[in-house]
Length: 117
Figure 1 (cartoon, rainbow, N blue to C red):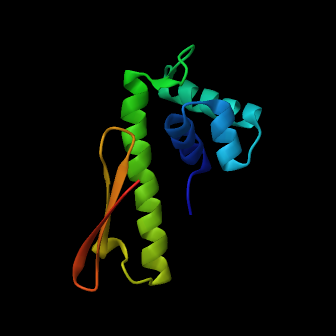
Figure 2 (cartoon, rainbow, N blue to C red):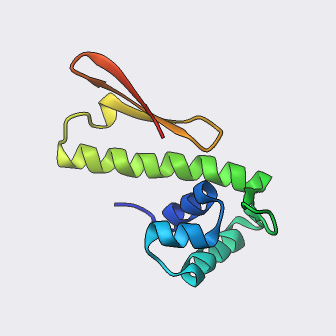
């Protein structure tokens, strides 16, 4: 379970470009651009500063990014919970570090595990 448009947005934000996000997601660049344009229309404004290389998030884009990361994390937690996998939602959390990185925090064998991505 997931929202592919949110994954596309996050990939563009993390890679800094439509083409690199398209390669990462194994999609065409026009498909990535079209999805971002639809999200910007729904958001009521630009999410990326055009002309910047790499692309930079606008203020609205930074807000959108923070929510997208949290929503995708909830999808991951839901999938783990439904599968009954060890380390499910109650035992694992994802924290947005605010600089484009995330920290997955869990407990394994009684030890705190922090994985920064």
